Image (tube, rainbow, N blue to C red; front, side, top):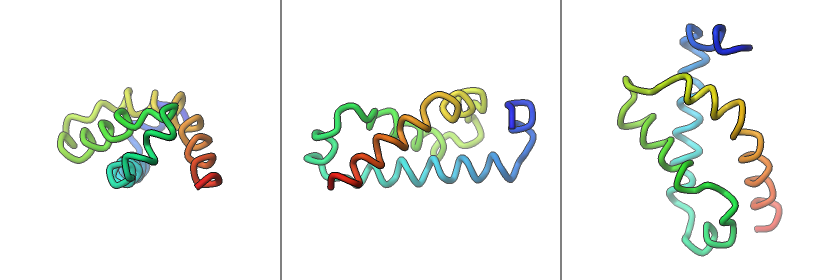
Length: 87
């Protein structure tokens, strides 16, 4: 899927935004000692993306979301997998 396919795919966009919200919400509830042990994970950005999706839903910039999917999601998933394996 490319951005031109993603943008009008309402169900896919909603699913992606929902999952971004879930990831950010989970990050909000981690104890500080966990987030401090993994400074390579951009916790502020993860929580911030959640805040935008939840509180500014109608102003979400899908180009930014698409960029995050393309550039940030895989490294984030790898870092979170490492965290889960170590914890």
